[in-house]
Length: 489
View 1: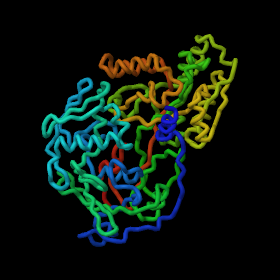
View 2: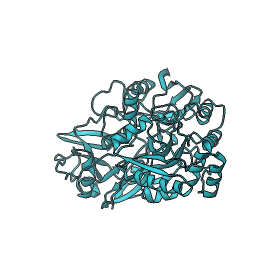
View 3: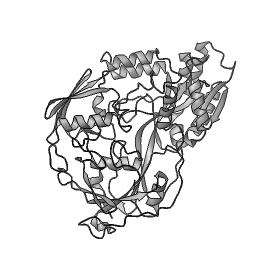
View 4: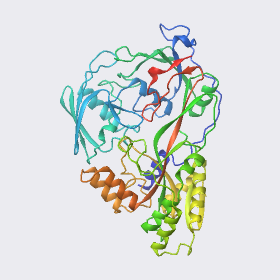
């Protein structure tokens, strides 16, 4: 479990991803059939980077750029907007009741004109649940069974009122295998010689984009994509900012919220932080706005609960907490613990500049209220090892949550370092999932208990060539969310 947990930490972008700046030399040589002068912007052709060495398969692709392209070729039962709200696509309606999810399909067709049936959905579900791209969000799904040609039932292991947000896996035609199985998305893949491109899916209703053709330009690796945009080889670049730094590039760039939760973790066995009053004191001393605007250079959103502040279930709630140093000092006095008796350790991955600066800010905040803080800034490998061994009083952590905002990885799961699995928050969360209390009942319990302190949710950056125009709306579930509104100047 420890080895697996380390992998989860890495996959959750706690460590740094290093990027190079290799120049792009590989270009598309062949033109797609029926399309001439593909470099002419008036033809409505967008060029996207992809890895030719990686499979163009929604279930086996590993490169981020390829997975983004898959979102143009395949639809799910639902898609997510920027608030992680499930919007029906292939599904017509659904009922979530306890551990059962009943789904009725709409009258949708694949790009080859054949109808999408429950059989196709079950086939796709079986592919997705064993795919590293979708297995995490589907880990609570036990099986999918067919009720009729357009109705099916998903069985959950545990109740989840937000299970529909996980039904975004690609639906492919039954029996489709290998590269580019048949889908029903906005574009259809075609191959001409050595060239791969996407054309508008004429079977897709209510989709008439200015961009009619998308050329896929091979690149060596992820580090090449940024330079590919800057030299004009491609027209789009997505940077999840997991490296912990951001450099401006010569392109139009917009921030987009992602579901990466950054928090201050406690060691529940710590002499100090086994005490709820001291955890509350730390919470009141932290200036999240300063962390977001300065440490993260504005590429984050302050969090006052463990859930994404953009999440539709909480979007109307006022959870903002102001810094209150006098109240923090009062809580310290109430704890009757001498916080000057020893120094506390704060562990951070020094390879991530966003988090290193966050840790330095937190050290300063805590010293204002009387703590003595020893900042332990370790390289990635040593940082992970120290977290696993519990060699800290506090640490800066990060986890990417599933679209349904499942907190299981924190309460007893693979990244629950330092948290007491029997804490009040864990018990209250189980009650919420089982319909025995409301969402805000859990949030209020969490904010009193504070097994960890929410700091922020990170942003990613989406960049577009300067020759493009439109209202660019990329979101976590689909970086090409409103591509139908994109065009060239």
